[in-house]
Length: 435
Image 1 (cartoon, rainbow, N blue to C red):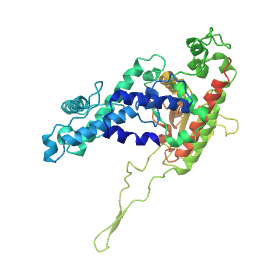
Image 2: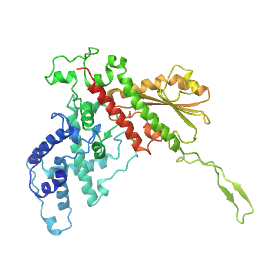
Image 3: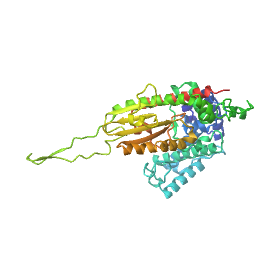
Image 4: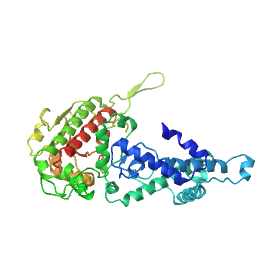
């Protein structure tokens, strides 16, 4: 309750930015303790909006800068003739000046308008509407200036993360989608789980390599395989742990929930409309059937179009795969089969480390390429869907979201249940690591 009350006194009183930085440093200290993370966790992890794991925290320093910039813009754009003649003087100290920040934001907005709309992410051109400075007025201009200042603050945090070789590793995870935690998820999450989640993303888990770096140990090797025991090694790269079935146990936990979600989604499929319109002439003397035209919004996911889907998974308690799959040596994790339409959807789940998502996706797709061709030659319509799932439910950005393509988007609780299987599994692997 304290943080929402701070922006107002910071706005109305002449407080320099250095004092606000000291206040934020004190807040960060207690926030880290509440999250259960080490004191050395960078502030980028708590406030960066572009981080792969985004927390619902607000930076007091950023709110202070935005508040001062909003106040200056309101005074400059005021319709009061007295305020127009008086140059506003807002004191913010020598380290950061609000007048320079607002002028810089306005210049950036003007330059962006000259450059035009460009592609900034994987969505591509035309996926979002652009707001131009010359066409904005009043409050819209102030909002654009505030948003530009926020973007500059976030860019500064990303630049800081790039310079951090350990806690900034997420800047190289190009194929991992962002995971945004909400307050509701944090309230319902076990304290040790949220701590493990943050420390695993920023490589702050007590692996032997980190313990050597922190001066707590002298030997960084893994007691099982004698390799260097890093966070990546413990969670996904130890050969002995793989032979002992630790990674298979985690994989099967996620697979079980994924198969259950697909089984629920198959009952919500949409059948195509087969009733054509009947046209009647004036007076009712003549009538005829119109031609059926299927609209693009009828088929929303891969499961739409038929209602006889049969789901099988490579798990002991689930049904076996169709005979055409059992005849081969390959065993997809999940097979969704429709006998009426001769369709086969093969879902292959992988739980790699974030920097190997693209590699795992390509490997799985090439692995089932020959099987897909054999099924197509046999008259089936086969689709392979490699799914990469990691610590915070990050699907690979190189493929479509399976929750949407398979019709699971309407059941967010089920998807959240699958997430709750993955993180505890990795947490248990981290806890069970040999000392």
